[in-house]
Length: 187
Ligand code: HEM
Image (tube, rainbow, N blue to C red):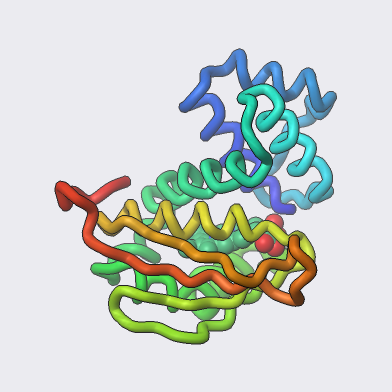
């Protein structure tokens, strides 16, 4: 897993819970090393951090991943605004994950290990996609999608009828978007 993902987690935890909470996670995991954005680190270290956060915050690993995905997108939408700027809605943005966003990520980090998304259905307010990754981080994908929706001033409802964590060969995410009540654009 790329160091940038660890950096995003640290940033999100400090922003929401303060530096003491991040320090507590570092102490609990014993993972005090610096994470360079372009470096590659064992997936197990990310799982350790997320597991420690779930324990500390008295919630589930899936909820921590969903929360982290939302926060990470908010940060990425500022840092990589050119991926978001051409779009007015979550659905058209999402269709660019493979061929524009993650393709560019691979140019920056040639050894990145990126997930595969197959788009099964897409209309202006609904995208059905299949997620495949040996990491089985579908909750993180849900968080990324919810975060993107927030960026575009939409609420996402995500139904997850097929899941690798339940033994299926891929996760299917049925995503429906509607204008957020109040209508303000998010991050
Ligand atoms: C809705 C939009 C997006 C979704 C659903 C998504 C999904 C994911 C998921 C689930 C992973 C975890 C790796 C795995 O599952 O195997 C991942 C990794 C990653 N994504 Fe995305 N992503 C999105 C947008 C972005 C954006 C905007 C960027 C940055 C510009 C980005 C950069 C990365 C990077 C750097 C990794 C780490 C790859 C590695 O560790 O080797 N993603 N993405």
